[in-house]
Length: 210
Image (cartoon, rainbow, N blue to C red; front, side, top):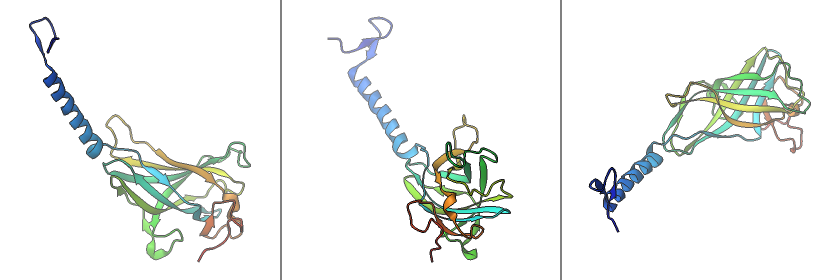
């Protein structure tokens, strides 16, 4: 049995089993280091059924609780966020006029029920590798074309995330899509109060939590 593989002819046999093992071990080490220490992943996003919302003809304001999870080892930086609201196919909101509606990230809070002393204007933040960040994001849209009374709608949280590959242009990436039951807002729609997005809760989502 030969112990080396010829490349060009029988005299050029230099790939020995020990050399092949060493090369494979080096490749495995480099790949493991990249996977454990350097690899960048994609952010995962989660929300709950509670949000604060004001449906006014002058402005739409929503404070949405989010948890952003970075499953990869390398940190990621969120430079911007937005809320995209679109018509729900086949639902009461199937009229496409005014959609999709974009609400921009204006400020951040420390709770879903905002207070002036907890409000900070939008600024980039980091999500460390294998960590999760809780945030309460305020989205706004001035002079909205619709007041979102005939929900449900499709809501999508989108983000601008850095760093990115040199081959990838700067673009919005969808993080989370969910059903936005704005029809449950009930009374006092123009007031920025906590509401529920869960149609199974009693009270039709218009209760105010203290």
